[in-house]
Image (cartoon, rainbow, N blue to C red):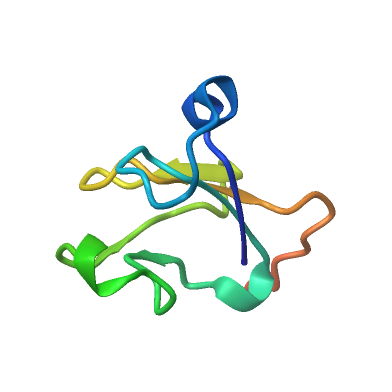
Length: 81
């Protein structure tokens, strides 16, 4: 899982310690996806919510606004397919 700066951070030069939403790129190893992740700082915790990213390739957390996207070329192994 890699984090990238949000558009707001890029435009205003803020660092990742700001309270702005983040954009996070995930791989198949990060599934099932939930927010907050195990790498989320304690100060930024909220109730865990599982996000369905497989069908659309992206999902946004309803609590903190973090946007998750699948890395290009990510292959998802599904049972029964």
